[in-house]
Image 1 (cartoon, rainbow, N blue to C red):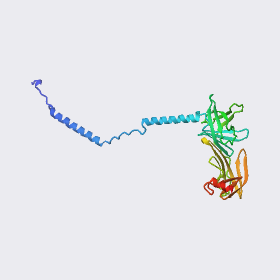
Image 2: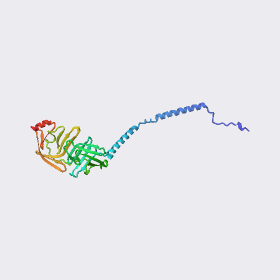
Image 3: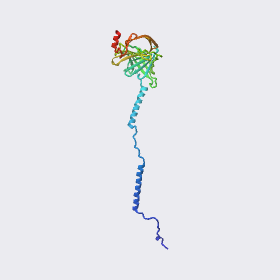
Image 4: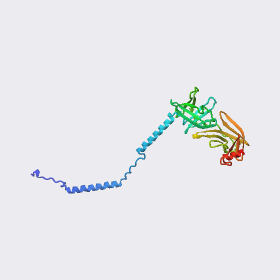
Length: 309
């Protein structure tokens, strides 16, 4: 009987050669590396990241500008209590007329009533006690009063309400007097009450702008007859320091032969009939003489000589 310790079991396994193993591992590394390179070459290129259109500093700057604008408009339309930038309406009980006032840049004051417009100057001050005052100035000294304003008189003003809600109210009190305060309300723009005449027949010799022959740089009067039947009469007075007064009357007119009917509005409708004539380039109307600038006669001196002759 054979001893079991002498029995050798044969198997298919054979001793591992270390050199062969290293070669196999190297081949696998080469194969894996080449595949990785091929995959990288086949894969689409990654797009380069673009910088955002709005950079942080730009966004911050825009936010600052937006905040500034918001603060400005909030102040202007909600908290401001000054007369500029608003159309004020005064309903006069004494003459039954509606007056519209505007305080513009450059200390310019504008008033409208009926079909009239007056533009002149104003001053605004704050007294030592904090009282705010307005003074309407007419350097021509041709005007005395307009609505609730007496020219040259200082009045105290106080403004309440919100501009953005269109309900601001300005109260005027004559300084040192016990008169009832005048109340002006924020309003829509003034509208001229005139309508141009229907089926208007134009006199082409009359149409255009005419200047009073005795006008000068400091005092000028003009008439402008339009081909739709509207007429504008303007008197302008200029003074040193940039002060001025301009009085405009908006009218309509019709002509028939040598007669002209002029219509305008004060408190009520006014119809004025007068005669006119045009001779040698000179318009005679209501005892005054007018010429066209640039025509013959071309200058005030030439026109004056022609009138005097």
